[in-house]
Length: 524
Image (cartoon, rainbow, N blue to C red; front, top):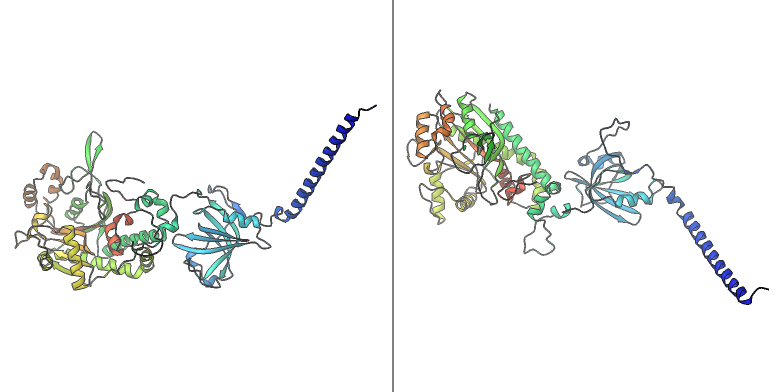
């Protein structure tokens, strides 16, 4: 006979097991139903149309695709299928759609990824999760936008994506946002948000910072200055030369040089290609120019000084008067300014959107003033400059404002500087012993070229070097170059980064140096 207590416990256990089984059955049924509802998603209709590509290692390819440049996307391509490679600038998921802004250099276009018979939810979700700055390939149909897309440069069309593939993924967390680094800078007193990325953050993360439309424009315009410089001089019969950057003595006899270890001794980084340009003239090259790095060991943490910059230097033999050279340089600048105005208007407008500035003005031919005339203009404004004194930076800026107001030009030449403030190789004026055959050129009140007639007689050059207390043994090779006959010549040196800074009306030369070097920065 079975005990009654045991029977009760057995019934309870059976009831418990029955409930457990019922619960498991319901769970299985729910799971089955859920599986059935998600079945279409499991059969992803977009398989093979999105994902991450294998690392490109230059394998033999079977697929040949023709890519379209974003800058060419306009109404003329309406309803055409294109492949485009670019960066994910921004992405925004909205319901069953994802809006991606694709950036290619300084051009942007809107991309729509939308659920359809051929585009799955999974593909839309994948698109929305691609991290900013990742490089993607996408296939899309170009469609005319129903209304202008003001946030993109290609405002009249959008791309309706059919494939999207990640070529190179970016890390999700960026040290700066491209949108923030691209915002127009507003005056502090102006209402509204004024998000700025500070200069050190930009320079510490320069690769990202250089992706902004403004920086893309700045450095394309800077390349334009180099090309215009080369083209203008080449057309005038100049020869491009390349001069040493490791030298045995200070280029200009000063102390502001970087010393480097050179085997068992020491050498210096060139402050200027000056001496070698002159040697080339003595070697009968007649007209020469060079583009290259220049090093200045000056502990100057100003808006316009760098310890390494790109020098655009030229030297030219003349027949009777150094103005033959000076006016050639003036015309060279006019040609560069005209070339920038006519060929780089888009880049100039792009920079002005973030950093507004007055358009650069110049006269043809350039305005030429004597140093004494400049002193008089300053005196009229209440600033006295001595006959044998150089202009201070505030003096130069004030004179620039006066010249702009009086002559409506941002570029001018100041001739006949005091001899006392020029280097030892500068030819003294033949009439006024206090003056020299030298000149500076200015943009927006800041010096961008210093030049002069050079002394081409070895005895006179030795005399002037002694006057400046220069060790003759260190410049012996330089002086010797003139012992075999040398034509009269003159020239000048230009700082590329400073020219671009002033032409665009920017406030700091670090904005026009791709990887700037100053007393506090040697990276990246």
